[in-house]
Image 1 (tube, rainbow, N blue to C red):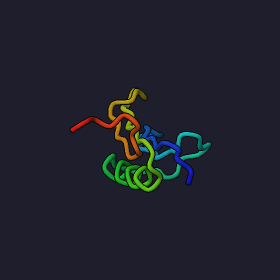
Image 2: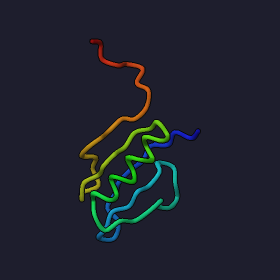
Image 3: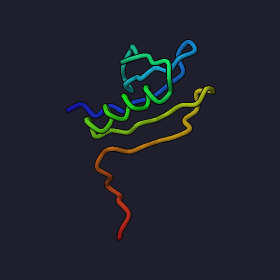
Image 4: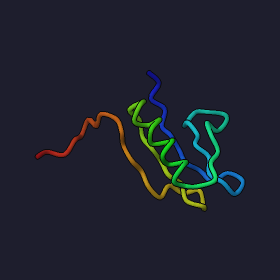
Length: 74
C-alpha cells in the first residue's frame, strides 16, 4: 500500500487535503475540522504522517500513524 503523507493546506480561502506527491488536492473543505478528519483517516489507513499547515504555509502540527522505528521505551 502506498504510504504517502497527507497534508492539510490553505487553498483559496478554504482547506485542502493533499497527498504528498499528488498533483491535485484529494478534497477541499470549508472547515479545518472536516479537512483534518478526512486527512487523519487517510493517514491512518496508509500508515503515514499527517501534516497540518497554518495560513502562512508552515507546518504547525504533525501526527504520525505509521510504525515508528524509534518508539519510546516504557
